[in-house]
Image (cartoon, rainbow, N blue to C red; front, side, top):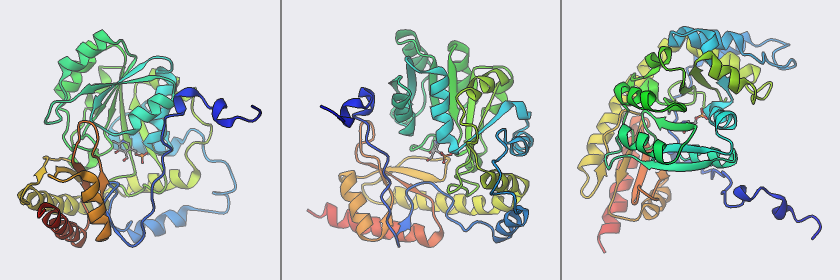
Length: 359
Ligand SMILES: Cc1ncc(COP(=O)(O)O)c(C=O)c1O
C-alpha cells in the first residue's frame, strides 16, 4: 500500500510507547524529583543581566567552553573531561549511539526507565540485571551477566531512581575491574547526598559519570546535563553530538548557577531535612513500607494497587509517580516537596489508604 507510514517505521520502535507526560494544573506536583522551591530571584536577575542583544540571534558556543570550564572547576576535573548535553537524557542516548548500536546494554534494574528506552531507540538490546530485593547492586551478578551476555555498555544509577539508595564506590570499582566495556554511572541526584564515584575516573577510562542541572540546581526547564569521562570517551561521543545541542541561554544559566551554587545549599538542606521527616511519617503509616533513601524522593509500597493509590491522590490534588510494574508491584514514588506539600501528600495518602483498606 502506498504511504503505509506504520510499515516504514523501524520495527523496534513499533512497540515503544511515546513519552507523553500528562499535564495536571493546580496540583501539588511531586512526580518528577524537581527542586520544589522558586529559583533564587537574585540569580534570575543575574542571568538576565548577562543576556545581551546578540545572545539569542547568534548560534551558541557549540563546545560550551565556559560552561565546561565551570563544571570542571565544580567537579575537580579538567574541561577535556566534560561534555554537556540537552539534559542528561540526551547524553544517555548519545552514549548508546556511540557504543551500543547493534549490541547489548546491561541495566541494573529496577531503575530509571529511559535507559531501556534509549537502548531500544539506539537499536541495541536492553538486558535487565536484577538488583537485590533491597535494591543494592550485586557486582558479582552484574559481572556474571556480562560473561553470559557480552555487552559493550552497563548502566548503574546512584542514588538509584526510584529506590533512592546509593552504590558504594568500592562496588563501582569492582564492576569496573571486571568489565571492559563502558560503565555509565548516573549521579543525577548527587547533590542531595554528596556521595560520588567521580574519583575513580582517573584510574578507569571506561567509567562515565552523568550529572544534571535538572534536580538540585532547579534548571529542569532549561535542559542541561553533563558527562564526566576520559577524553577518549568524550572524543568518541563528540561524533554523534548535535552541533548546537545546548542553547546559549541554558549555557549561561547553568554557568551562573555553578558560580552561585552556595545559594542552593540551604534549599537542599531544608528539602532533605523535611524529606527525612516525610520519610519517617510515611514509614509509620499502617500497611506502608517506605524504602530508605539518600535522594530527594522516596519509594514506597502499599497493600493497594499502585494505580488506585495514584488516582486516589490525584483526585485529592496530589501528583506522584506510579511505578507499579515488574519488580516494583504496588510501588509509588513521591518527591520531597515544600513542608505544606509534604503534609498535603501524607494526609491525602492516609485518606486513600483508609478508604481503600476498609473494604
Ligand atoms: C536517574 C536520572 N537520570 C537522568 C534523568 C534525566 O535528567 P535530565 O533532566 O538531565 O534529562 C533523570 C530524570 O528524572 C533521572 O532520574
